[in-house]
Length: 454
Image 1 (cartoon, helix red, strand yellow):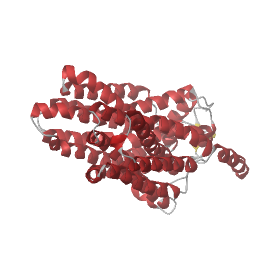
Image 2 (cartoon, rainbow, N blue to C red):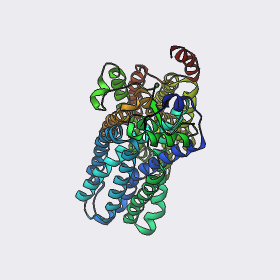
Image 3 (cartoon, rainbow, N blue to C red):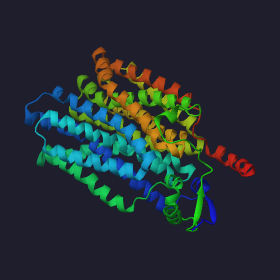
Image 4 (cartoon, helix red, strand yellow):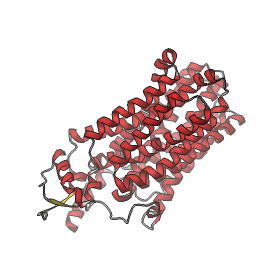
């Protein structure tokens, strides 16, 4: 049947309502990232028990940790490409199934070499999930809600990490590390099975495929839009790009922002991973007990949840340039303060407050950068763009293992001096991005002009 009505899916999505169904879709997408964060940090919780059982020192597991990060780096590239070519839903749920199965298999290993191989392949799934979750959640919602939706999705990584710690605390003493991996692998598989039936594909992805327009029409009706079954679709709010590829990110239209985002992700993830990996060691070397060291890590992580959600709400009103640069500047000041004081001389309350401020802002910048990347790239290359930026950021994460160790050898203050320097580079890179998320005022002002142009 020849379509009789042309519908602009860009207008419906970007300027439409924020329904309860859309919120459920974002929550379902975010849930996959909670399990991504859970499985990502299970190994760290299990290593002490594995060391005892296998009579191995901690350095024996360094290659396992590096293999996971390397797999996540490659997974970001591959996952983003698959999402743009074959659909965000398929790529996301495929990634969840992948890391779920491989984490489950880790419950049966008996040597480091097998563990390293499984962890590398699990890393492919862990790395591929994030760019597709960010793209999917951004394309379910109106433009004014996009930063909040993406940030709410990405901020589930530290929530998943917190869940990993709590799960380990319950399971490890009673059942051991094998049960921990079994539970950590089974839960994502159960979730993937449920979402395979209920999670729809991105409407913007469906709009690009004429054969799937009936599916798009049905989805838009569920989103509250009156769309006939035989509608044809255009998307006036998205730029048309050639076939998705990493090369398309470096065309003249996107080259500057791609390079700026790559630098920002590299140094921001280097900063974040350095903090997560080395703050506990810094605190114990300064004379604090293991409990305080773990509280410090919790403060560093969970401060980011509050900061990221707050930052996303401010971005919706003021735009991303002012908001993210202000948060980055605040993180730099926090690092400089920590570098200038004697860590050992600080009270526990003061120290945890400084770590919550600094780690919170670092994680908030990192999280809201996903929303910025999702805004920079149009739907045709959105998952590829986010995936490439994240993959480059993972290289920074790998570098944090060496940078943090070097800085700690030079003294506790040098760790935070290093973070202040890397974040200064992040500030410069983000300042050079051209396509920042506009403020609500700018969006409202642009609509009459766009309508006049049409």
